[in-house]
Length: 479
Ligand code: MLT
Ligand code: ZN
Image (cartoon, rainbow, N blue to C red; front, top):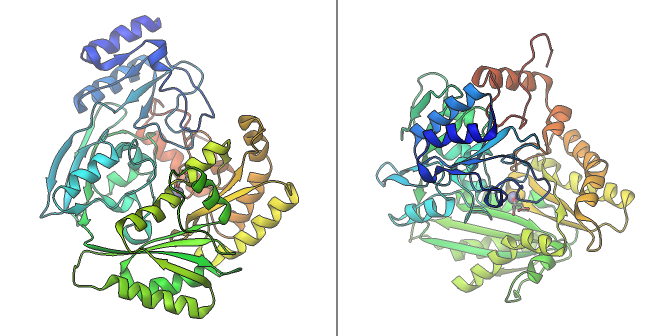
């Protein structure tokens, strides 16, 4: 069957506006967010309802066409980009962007999977509640993608990752069956927790079309501080101190090196008044929904103790919204700063907190031995043991070529180090197509075998995001 016959068949199951086959418009969907790879497709499908998604999946299964689900196209690992075969179609959820229901009493929000994260945050805020998922891409990433990649972000230390926020799900299976489990229940011990199968599956087990998310009380007060670290300051111990003394009020503990801060500063319009100490800097935030707690007083006491320990040289408590925003702007602009300079080779490492200093020492020596002139941008969610250990692409280098070169050698050394310390090559960015070989290399054999069996059970004809995350199970193979 020719591609135009396929387009015609899909047009029939969609209303008029639901399909894009103009090559120029298609091009905006086929390159990954980091512009490392461009795939190929002959049409983008844009359903408006769950029923249309089910019809699309049934038709694709009949025609043997792979479907690559795409939300905001913000995957760092090529999870939403079709391969080069031209045999895969993109299924964009962008038209399914409704807020279905907010229940302030149950503290939950039900949304379409194509809802933009920021819009869901705003909808929750309109009833005085917080959707505690916050990340740089929140203005464009969509809830389905957040679920598919189990997105983390800037307040995981307090609220957990997307997995921890998911109460209910609606998803279309590979034969068109709709899993309709949009419940708001905190407790529901009735067999397998099917919704969790879709979390982190990057569209390989089903197409998520809706979700119910847990909300939290909106913080009434926040205390935000910038800590300039002394040379060799032990990050895990400092976190331990701050966490212990601020109890469960800690929402953020973000580490940044001086180089990352300088990159962010270059990308901001107003130069910030904060900078790094010899050991870098940490952005700490406490938040409480109670207006009775003196968070500033608590933060001052915690910082006083940290200064006494000798781990920090100086600390600044934000005195106004503007100062708080300026501190956050530095942290949030680091990826943009890297991009402006010619990008970075990203390593989304996580190690147990107890090994974080060791990782920094060992990785530093590896980089030094590999290329003494290489520049690093190291920052991340240290509260979660997650470091973005990025090698900057030299301004005059070919970005793609340099990335390939680093990824084929130094990156593997860094991942080896993380693995030896009990860590992982992907903390919050997923596997997609770019990190599949790393999962093969570092994943536990039994776990990969289980993943393959699950993939085969959910998607026997391999039409759901083929080529991403994991290969299907092959009878007779041990993994
Ligand atoms: C972040 O923490 O800012 C992102 O996960 C990393 C990035 O955008 O490079
Ligand atoms: Zn991150």
